[in-house]
Image (tube, rainbow, N blue to C red; front, side):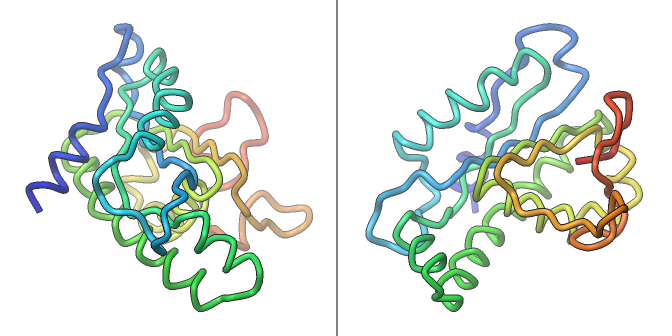
Length: 183
């Protein structure tokens, strides 16, 4: 447990401007591991660090970035899942999500009431969509803090003519640049 907390805390980058310190970003990285295992370990790899630097570090101009280490799916398990092996896809996704959840809870407990920006890419977006559905969509105190979720490469389903209602019940798509608490 202490190791997990150190890894999560080590994933935080301080904001680079006074304006940025008004917001918190929770970033979940995409699939980047070529390991022969189904999921990665909690120790960040060089690939994790490189991806976080490329994708998340620029966010520090607009927010205090939190980038947790998590047991992400590897390319091998994702390929098996995309080829139709639902058992591998579901089990490895569950491991990934279950390792992000304590980081999310840790993040919420330590960030006060600042507005939250969620950012994910690919697998990170899938994890965040599940997290929003399970931990944000029905939690008014957290939903009020959600400024926006940026979910690149995520599979979010919305009924035709609606802005919410399939994948997520309450968090809608952003329909204007002035809208908040949206995706």
